[in-house]
Length: 217
Length: 263
Image (cartoon, rainbow over all chains, first blue to last red):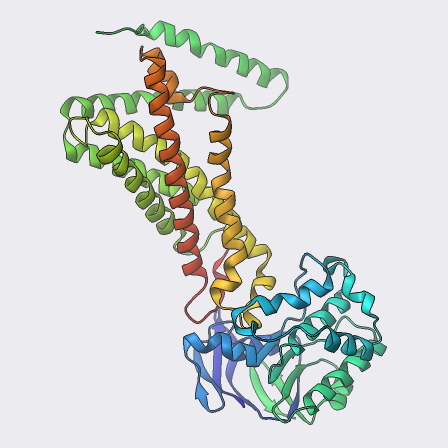
């Protein structure tokens, strides 16, 4: 589905990405590990074209993406920030927000689906009425994750999605995401983690980043 | 015919003595503002005297190219000031403020000179063109810098939020919509506020001048009403202009938010 060739990006003579090539196919659950500052976040951002790259290309189903097609591409390949932004309003209103965007307008907001996922994570429905700015870092990671999942993307690019969660909730998020990826044939994720054991639990393939270069594990 | 009292140098010097009060307060309260006060007072005298000399020269000659040259210089200074006042900056900010202040104030002043003030001899009659442009520039400058500051500050502090919208498939227009609206609204608030209280709390400078020079109050008021609308129009155009140009600079065709450009 998602392919990137020779992504290269330098900043102030510092190499952030060095000819990084990666492919994520349907059904793949890829773990991406690497030291802090090795370029993992830069890679995810480059894959969804949030930042310009100096050279290299990204393809979706074998074709490069026109400027006008970038929003549609990003609705298929969705990047999640490690530290989501706080929003005014309740958790529920934050979850509903993306349906105002043109690209998601025709999709219905399903409270039922959200409640089902919250249940899997051990959270009650009252969580939806909480004020978003009062959430802990881990809770807002959960909201950002559910917000993305409900939009039904094909590929999730997850930037340490459990970094602020306790170990019990981390396990629940892991199984929620593995279930999600396995529930349809056209889904995949690329998961950045520092935790080798977590990488083993969630992935069926692992890659590693060293100084902006990608290598298989 | 002259129906106002021309001030002598000594009369002006008498008013200048008020600065002794400021100086005394500064020394008494250890504000350490004496030096700044002195410089500010000197600049007030020197800058206004120079402007008076330039205006006198231009008023006498009444040449269109001289009027345009002075107008261009005033516009350029206003544009540069608007970008310098901004807390955050990005490459190309100065050009954007100059372009938006130029287009908005010249359009509106042109409208005033050609359409509203029918009956003046020539459009470039400096007595009308220069003060009108000056007033429009001064106020548009405010709107532009307030709007621009709000926009860049909002984008800087809410960058993750803007990006998370883009990451979910928002277009650049959708991602920037909230900061754009906030910026234009904030830029227009000062002029709306002054339209609300004009005449109640203070008499505007131009109207004061016309009253002192002996103009009939109702005539002076009509001029002032025109001026208020000119300022409001130019401020709206200028603010929208600078915010839109900044948006085009900071969000590219690929729906990328160039947050790295904001410093």
